[in-house]
Image 1 (cartoon, one colour):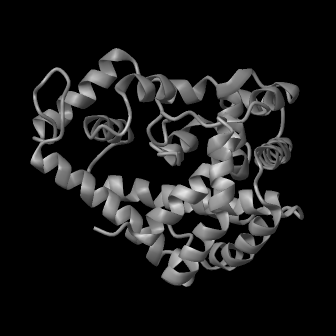
Image 2 (spheres, rainbow, N blue to C red):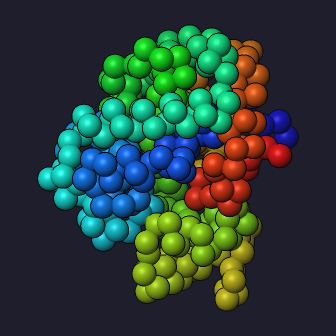
Length: 286
């Protein structure tokens, strides 16, 4: 089966976006603003387009994080710095990381010229993280502008993915179990990254077993019904990303963006900045 053009574009844009989490300068940039370490920096930087929000809206918009983990960072972060300062810091550190890795400025500029109209025209309905990022003033720097557009469209897809989960009656926590059972990433990786305690993690697996979506094994796998639900979620995510915005590019335009950014994606992957096993489930090019 051919890979949906929306998924092909996601793999490209996600790789470039993810430097904002894994670049060496991210944690120091947050600490320089007064934030307490990596996770407070993560939540403050990613939530900054929404303004000085409390934990609740971020739990809802990010999905999959234990609420107690988010509450350790927000709203405390806003007593230490401002969303505006976080927006500037994340743009600076992400742009520098892409440049240091070897992203090609001319290719980024051309890709940004193709993606800009897409982000401007994409449907914001039910997509709070997309809408908040789309409202930001784009950087003058070509690499920085491409990073922001990658981020904006990545959040557009993510918002649509959460809607697909809700449609299938799957919580953010349960979604992790479906991906673990499918072998997308190890259980230990996603549990540590999302902060779920033993009891809640186990209860989510039991809830999926009771619906016939996971096998009863100690290390569960997807049942046929579970695979059907996961495939439906992924298919809806691709389709809503496409019909909600990316179709403006057309398949040819999406392919052009992927080709333009391929050397930059390979440069980021080759830099070792992004872990091979990561919570996004991103497969990095060799």
